[in-house]
Image (cartoon, rainbow, N blue to C red):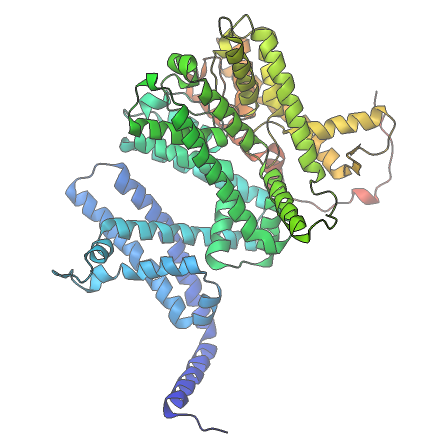
Length: 612
């Protein structure tokens, strides 16, 4: 055997000594890591709060220095955690750290340069010197690490078998409360607004509803619109989607339970496809929103007299709001703007496409991706037989039901409003507006014509569409077209005397039918409850307007007959709860509050109940 060189021998002895040291003090090292991790999680939350306060207010020099000092303390905590893990838990740190997380940690360590080394007068690389010694680099790095730390904290809660429904509800509630506080910052509004209005707008944004008690263009500054955009995007994609992406993408691995939960949430067919599926969903969302923004920018009529910057803001915000089915608009008067109606019909067509794309659901998009991938593989096989059932039953039912509901709504709206709100328009414009106004009530809430002028039968048609909504796991609201399809199939099987519901040569599981029945029953119960409370709080408002408002809020649509600004603070709070319940889902909310129980029903004797 070749003898080891002195250098290799000393290196091996050092590694052996380090391994013995870690083994001997392993318990103490793990305890220290947990303590520092807890402090880092608190510091991460505090860091984000401090950044919001720093950028949200105009500060005196002394106050600004105090905030920067507090941010430096958070920086010290983060650096301590990184160094501790690299020194005492090097192997586990390397195993649980992905390439992106390494970049964030290296940037964090790079922020120490301004502490330990004075800025040189003649740097070798001026651009690098400017970057490393800038506050923008420090603040961006602290924000990135804080988000990373909180994402890992949330995923660790999931690893402890935390109720996913409760976690989902709490995450939405956290963003609503945080968003309401941020929207009250002086730099977010032109003039101060009440907390009731801020809470209502934040609830509407996170629940992607679109109802608002204030005029968006005249109330919020560009910074406020940016906050609204973040709340809409977060509420649309879901908090768990973002945190799952951060945890998986930054580290490359999580616990098996986490991966199973994310797989079920994303409807991925295998655990190996989790990161590709998450990347596909996020990439598809951003791509559609960018393409939509470009299309809206081109379609904005010159008659509006907007500058290039204003057109960019309007196009970006409107595309995001449309795809997320949020219904917010930063255009004065919204999409009922007279100039837009007269010269910008292309904007309504683009909006309809974006709303429909956001309302069909991420499982459908994943299924389309799998279909496209299989088609490409079949082309490589050059004519070899392809697997059957590339489109699953859920995809077929969603697409069929969505097109049927859209067709009935468009034809019904055109026939009913032809000589009413659509009177005087050319036939092509009437058809375009009929499709637009039949599609947006299903969740988006945009309005090009005043809903207060609709015929009573049109209002009924619109409220039914609000109740139906978009597809499950989509950006749409309502009870979902999946539920409507399941109810129809169940009724058809009962009427025809079949023992099971079926469609497209597949039977529908009994669990799906039971869940659909529960969703319908609970939606009616919730509607009656919230409607009763609102009628009790606002007895002076017209019944028709209150009913329309409650339906719009509970099913996260955003349309109104013009009474939103007239509501009292208590009524605004009730509608905020309705929007939250509608976004989270009544079943998910109840499951999170009550939790699962042992099932003894299968051991009990069975009896029939007389029905009809």
